[in-house]
Amino acid sequence: MSDIEKIHGITPDLTRENVDRLLALFPDVATEITDPKTGRTERAVDFDALKERLGDVAEGNRERYQFTWPGKREAKRLTREPSAKTLRPVKERSKDWDTTRNLYIEGDNLDALKLLRENYAGKVKLIYIDPPYNTGNDFIYHDDFTKSANEIDNGEYNEFQDQLVANPQTNGRFHSDWCSMIYSRLSLAKDLLSSDGALFVSIDDNEESNLTKIMDEIFGAKNRIAIICHKSRASVSNDKIISPNHNFVLFYAKNSSILEEKRKSIGLDPILDNFTYDDNDGRGKYRLVPVDGPGGAKKGNPYYEFLGVHGYWRFSEQTMREKYENGLIVKSANSLYQKYYRSDAAKSRRTATTWWDDAGLTSSATTQLKKLMGGPSFDTPKPVELIQRMLQLITNDDKQAKILDFFSGSATTAEAVMKMNSMDGGNRQFIMVQLKEYIPQKNDAYLAGYRTICEIGEERIRRAGEKIKAEIEAENSQLTLNGTPKKVPDIGFRVLRVDDSNYEDRRKNVGTYSQDNLDFDVDITKSNRSDLDLLFEALPKFQLQYDAKIDTLSGGEFDGHTVYNVNDGQLLACFEPDIPESLIRALAAFRPRPSYVLVSERSLPDSAACTNFVEIFKQSADSVSGGTQIRII
Image 1 (cartoon, one colour):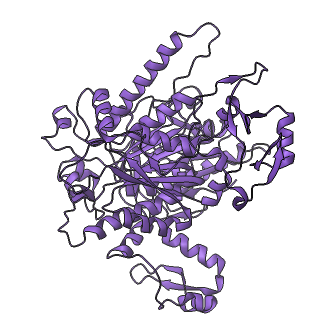
Image 2: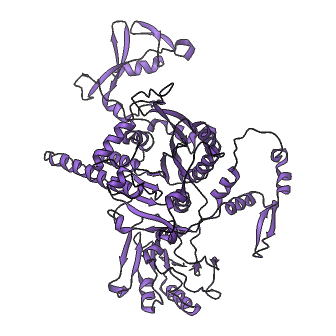
Image 3: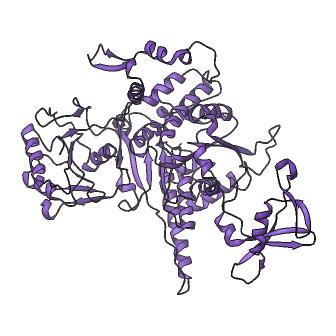
């Protein structure tokens, strides 16, 4: 069994990660530098040695094609900078806390993405965002945060004013500020995508060209699948030379070659109309489709005579013969057709185009949301149909997929996910992230009782979920005895809030310590933080996701002490001070044997207590189940 290891809540330093990867490839370019302030020595890259290794490829003074702006370097630095934030559970605002897999995260999405990266990297199948369009009338994120969460809660400043800033076109860095804001977030979003994942971003022509260049740089131009035109408006604006009636949707893959390999499973649901023929042979209904090769010789279609008809055909003569013998080829007049059965069509995917004129209008979305919420609540929401189309394209073969939207707004994406699950029986999971943006007092939503955009989003999810549940229950009530009832999808969500770490100061000691040289700090847990707060800060360190199953154990062998059981014994956690030996023995005797046991520094106040803890677990270890790793936070 390994010795105790201390963990901390800071997200990884991406600069350090990149340096370590480079030195793993080229260990001979390593050098050491000493921080004059801390006296700490770290491995670094000798760039002169690296250039020597790479030759002419590393020469940096040549002209090259690139897209840049004032502030780009800072945006890159901000992406790599560690975050000392945490996600705190807010059970009182959650729905179905114990059973749901869905997440609603309140807070700055830059911090949220850094936190999610620890335990969701490579796990998200689809990301959709609808960021600020930078029209000169909206707000963009201001990434220079100097105020603490306590100051926010105490009302010492207005988060809406400090975290979202107006960006008028008179601003000298109008486009630069927007580019810096979106660059950092997209860089982190890429890490969250699975190898077969995809990202969709809505935008209008104010920043479409800049956004395309940024995404080409981050994802690679070869991974740009399409720039889609979404018809978002039906009426004509007479105050413009040409009425702008569409938005763009930029569609990128994490790896286009993997999507290409899966192309047959990617697309829209098939249209199953006009299957009118039926030979009553058990094959079902079909329709006739041409078998001629319209490309002719230019496309390499073979030319031959079949059933007395000469022409260029889609298939080779041998394939045509096999289809004919199987009863699939039909001659009508002087033309040949193939039977295309409805059952085969139902298994196929329909190829989408870049022109989406039937994916919902903004006006219709606004009307539908107003009806759902019982009044006006959010301006210009995205249509549910738009996001459902993306879900159809990408998640048809993965109905357990994780869907992320880190500019959640009114939470259209959450409703779309729940609707898709209700339609096909899927278990897709949504993760919404939204800044706690305050609503102006003259706004209709404020008059209706909402104070933040988050309150609107959460209420929309509740109402949309209950509406879906009621519709399914009504449909099931009409079933015959032999009918198969539809299941109600996951319509709950855990609310989490981005906040400062649960500890007053970062650990002086980070890393692995043996039981002989543990250097315990004083208890620095903030007084207003719960044990559940501490558990959620620790989850990413064990690669446990925020929707993990969490049971609270206290009775029986634990004699009233509170122990958290995560994922049926994968992790046991107890944060009580000075835990007694009886509790330690109960933890060691727990079966199935946990992979990890987590305690706080106040649980083991000195090295003697730590030694006793380790020895008890060593005595309980067996050759079959192996040892348990102990962690202190």
